[in-house]
Image 1 (cartoon, one colour):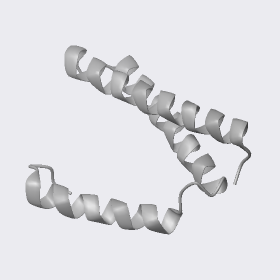
Image 2: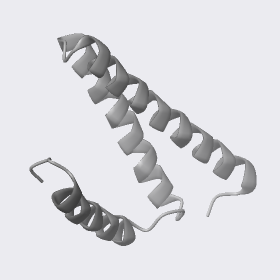
Image 3: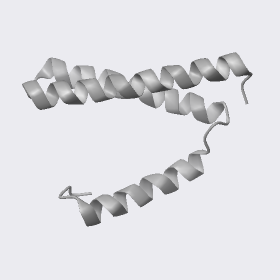
Image 4: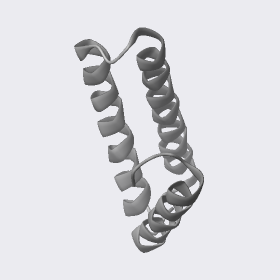
Length: 85
């Protein structure tokens, strides 16, 4: 585990990256899947994935638990959404 200040910084940056992904999704909803919008979404998702990896390295999350959560979410989406998952 990281010491207090580094842990706080890691969590803050992860939160910021989540927000940036949300913003890029909103831009695609508003303006369409234009090349620049999709490129920006890919960049922000990459940044978020980096932070997820750092959260795992810092022992704040367990990747096995995350993988189980992913499987559970896919099952819920299959049941409750129109997505082909």
